[in-house]
Length: 402
Image (cartoon, rainbow, N blue to C red):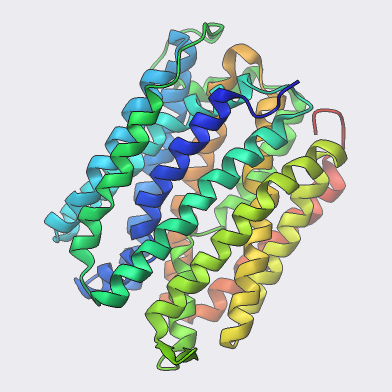
């Protein structure tokens, strides 16, 4: 049986192109926001709010996808919203408009995510889920590595010209939408939950399996302290300070080193995602995710103590393995524990709750940083991740679906 089907490949290419667009901007957004007057706390609130918007909408649009029995309209609209938001960041510089534009971008993610992941789940069997999601994450992350490389090259020749970069990011975003039209809709089972209001996807908890109700709370506790990666970029820039790195006669400052470290992280993430998916299909989701939580604690603990430039790159490589061991594997796990007719609703329920936690995570991280310094932010996060590790180790059993 072919594991990576045509649909999986096309969706993976779509994600790759969309991530090229997003990640061209992601490493420079915190720098740009600080340049136009945002504080670290305000950046934390911004990232929390926009991710909350994306997350809470994932549940609504996931349930709507199950109700209508279609996926592709949600996938197309979601990627379109994200694409058109890119150049708007350069046009609007006032905080209220930045919030609005970033919300459009993340809303696009909310519209498409559950429907897209349900499509991926439909293309796999329970025994191949982690590999399918791992492959998708790998391709997605290749895009996340290409994007910062393009940004780094552009800023090397045009330092500080962030606005032009925002316009250029529109190109791969629109290309991603064109690829979606190569897909054909398949008949989907219709949701058994019935219609309801915007928050009716929360009803899924009542019919969820016992394993789903054990796994999700642990994942959400972890999400409650897993703040935006922007804080990793900020701590990297803060730690490097005025130091520079010279390679083959070329000198790199803190901005280029920070982007370089983020590129390195994405390369490791991309390379490790599919192997981690294979490992999870063979050994069980729990074991691989436990490894991920442990690596996460090591990374955040390491960043708390002013690492050298060399150690920063080592920590980002470990962070890439953590992401590979958790991101795709968690989604595979969730879909294996979900009912087929409510797959998008189950994914939407989890990702919505996760984003509610992400809102508080980024606000907590920003508040801790502002009031007690960056070390407190990273030590607290590392400690909580170890508690989640213990919870999964003691409470969650391994099984064919786990």
